[in-house]
Image 1 (cartoon, rainbow, N blue to C red):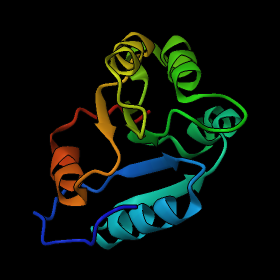
Image 2: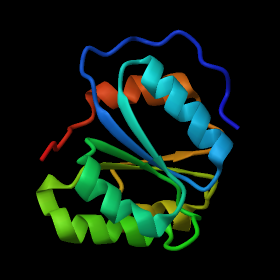
Image 3: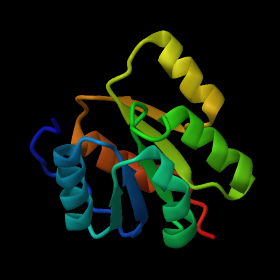
Length: 136
């Protein structure tokens, strides 16, 4: 579970963030935290729903779990990279899968960052403004 929110630098850059994870409590907590920081958030719970939401919502950033029903995060990331190329949203893995091979697969699939659960929400918030964003 995500730790309690602590003070973080507020970004003047408002982002569209898509959260894709089958752990609904974690998604709700993270969505509330990001919304509180002024970001626009959409939540989904299946890997096979990500592509439709990316087309519809045009997020700057996709926070993507690896072990989801429908399609795992590696396949989702690869399909988004193949479809959007340089205009792909920034992909951040947020997962409990923490072996070296998992990180290697994440890099191959096209994740920009790979965070493992549990993670520090303040560190995630601090990371967002520095990431390149590809708004379409």
